[in-house]
Length: 347
Image 1 (spheres, rainbow, N blue to C red):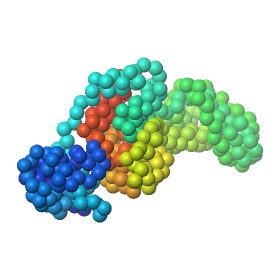
Image 2 (cartoon, one colour; image 1 turned 180 degrees about the horizontal axis):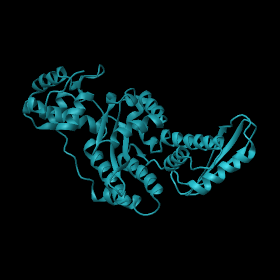
Image 3 (cartoon, rainbow, N blue to C red; image 1 turned 90 degrees about the horizontal axis):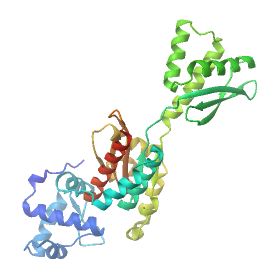
Image 4 (cartoon, one colour; image 1 turned 45 degrees about the vertical axis):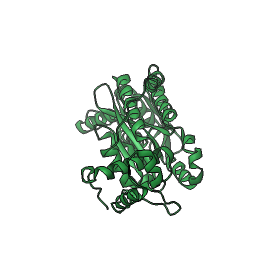
């Protein structure tokens, strides 16, 4: 893998030309030629001199020349160098800040998170994404409804009123009264606990011989609770809004990339795993193109920032997904401000 040269190793002339190429490409999506650069940059250099410098930047792996054009465009490595070492991020405008705060403030947290993905999508012209905090349901009731001699339907009612069902296998010859006994035990002894707390308490009481449950009933409860815990941990809660923004006029010549990206957005579990890596960091994460396997085929970028709960711990991630040529200088601080706004809401 090619290692980018530090910005300090580029001459002032190379830095100026590189900046113009990148900024022009991010603005137009088109390769940039030497004549365009000589007009845009006020460098007082001939097109031939500019071409020489662009050739040097291409040999460093920072620029590339599409076969259909004599112009140059930044490579993914070039974009990474620009984002990390040259980009001057602009603060969100007062209008953008007001729009974000107005959409997110007030109402249930779930509505605010959905609004965050929608407002980011609208302001950035990308797809807005929010990884929602994983919520462990708090038990209110738990019961078993026999389906056959081999199976029962386990019904969990959460403290928030949510109801979920799972089919569980029964031990051979388990009498129906033990199903009722198991449900009554959970509702009376484990209500008000999270799934993990309920599992721990059941395990401890069985270990100490303090439960009057039949062994088969205790095993059935343990397996039922485990199913929900595993499902909850594996199920990403991901909100994606604004996929249609990815099909814009500039993408008309690149429909295969857009089709690939829309397919990738269907893989919510993979996206959630990618965003989970942003949870571990203290700040913004920017993934450009093939830097992450998920979006390597479509050549897309992800900008993501963690947001925190009232105890200061990271609980979720907010961000955008778009083409690699998105306006990083504008979108990065916008995502960061949205994360800060969500953090204030949850404090």
